[in-house]
Every structure is written in structure tokens, then in C-alpha cells.
Length: 264
Ligand SMILES: NC(=O)c1ccc[n+]([C@@H]2O[C@H](COP(=O)([O-])OP(=O)(O)OC[C@H]3O[C@@H](n4cnc5c(N)ncnc54)[C@H](OP(=O)(O)O)[C@@H]3O)[C@@H](O)[C@H]2O)c1
Image 1 (cartoon, rainbow, N blue to C red):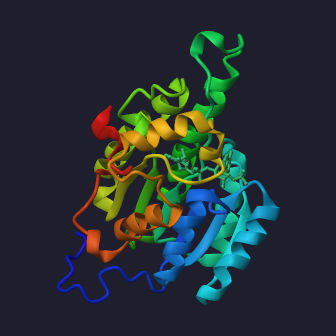
Image 2 (cartoon, helix red, strand yellow; image 1 turned 90 degrees about the vertical axis):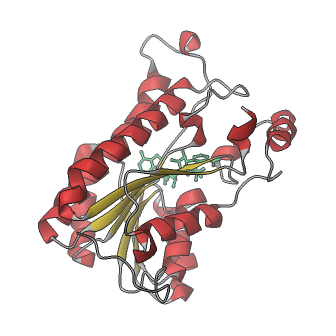
């Protein structure tokens, strides 16, 4: 059983905790890594682009903790196994896993090539990547017996059919990741591991740069908050889900989308 907080003192404190963030070298992942580092956590960044990883580690350094990057392709189980083993050698244990790595594609199913390349690329990253990482890290969290918090970054596209761009592989994998989150919360509760999701809406990053100017105005008009989100705001929600403040929260998916879905 995970102990309840008794006061708000230190309720959001991650001091001494080790967090593994996939795709932590840029965008939302870097926002999450930054928010957690500023809340006291040490961070392991998993990604493929080692140049961007070095830049991210340099950006995290002034926060005063321990920050390292590990080369990992989340679609490839062998790569995941190797990187997770290396990260555990370096950090001994992880209290927090953030499955953030993700890609999108804008294509209608009937326009895809015969191999359905777009379909499989997105599902292999956004859904299977999350499963691969949860398997490798979840087993170690269970065996360490110290509990943990797993946070899956999904999307509000899991709940709606986005009319601005066709993205069925993305929406489908994010919807499946939401339900995977709920299944894992039930399976892992007995190990004191909480599993939750965050479903962001449009947030400033490399991924959202692909949205044509003409659609930006439409999207912003649909949002009560009237602006795109920032990676650090998703990070703040991830800190909550990792911290003692959320000890009673598991199996939930929290939406952070400036209210975009309300008009859909
Ligand atoms: N931006 C938005 O508006 C928005 C909205 C809703 C949800 N999200 C979700 O937020 C997450 C981050 O998106 P973002 O906007 O920050 O995108 P981004 O700027 O394009 O970053 C994607 C991250 O995922 C990593 N990645 C991609 N494929 C990978 C693989 N096979 N193995 C390991 N790492 C991989 C990338 O690192 P490398 O390329 O170095 O591997 C990069 O760090 C995604 O899951 C996305 O679906 C974003």
C-alpha cells in the first residue's frame, strides 16, 4: 500500500528520486525532464539523437542533480534491453518511468503504401515503444520492491477524431496506450507501482511545427485557453503524477489541452 501524504510539505518533492524519460532530449520530454530536475530528481534521458541528448544534459546540469543520456530506439526490444541495463548500472534504481517518445504521421489509411509503413511506424513507436519500456523497467521496479510511478504521454487525439489532419495510426496508438495505462495500473498495483497517463493537446515542439499556419488559427480558436501549451506545463503535471501528492492516483489519464476537446 502506498502511504498517504500527511501535509503538503514536500508533497511535490522528487529529491533523491531517479527518473527515466524517453524522448527526454527535446520537446515535451525535455519539458518533463526539466520540471522533474527542478523538483529534485536525477534524470536518465533515452533517445536516438546523441547530439540533441548532449544538449539536453547540458541544459539540465544547472539544476544540480545527476543527468545522463542513453542511446535507445524504443521500437527495438534489443535496444531497449541494452539501454535499460546500462541505465540501471549507472543509477541502480528508477522510481519514475516516463514513456514520452513518440512520432506522428499525417496520412489517410487508404493513401498509405501497401506495406502500411506509416501505420506500423507509428504503432511501433507510440504503442509498442511504451510496452517495451514498461516491460523492461516494470520488472526491475517490481523486483526492487520500492514501488514506482509510470507515466505514459498519450494525447487528446486518443479521445477525438482530429479533423484538421488525418492521423488514424497516431490516434489509435494513443487510445490503446490509454487503455494499456489502465490495465497496467491494475496489474502493477500489488507492487506499489502506480501507472497514469497524460493526454496533452497542441503543445509547442518539433512535432507541432508541422501544423500548417492556416490550421493554427482554427485550432487556437477552438481552445478556451487560446494558445498552444508549453512543454514545462506538461512537465508540471508529470511532477504531480510522480510525487507523493498523487499517491492515491492510479489508472487515470489527465488531459492538458487548453480545453480544445470541449469544442470537438
Ligand atoms: N507536441 C504536441 O502537440 C503533442 C500533443 C499531444 C501529445 N504529444 C506527445 O508528446 C510526446 C513528445 O512529443 P513532442 O511533441 O515533444 O515531439 P518531438 O519534439 O518530435 O520529440 C519526440 C521525441 O521522441 C523521441 N523518439 C521518437 N522516436 C523514438 C524512438 N524510436 N526511440 C526513442 N526515442 C524516440 C525523439 O528523440 P530522438 O529522435 O532523438 O530519438 C524525441 O525526443 C509524444 O508521445 C507525442 O505524441 C505531443
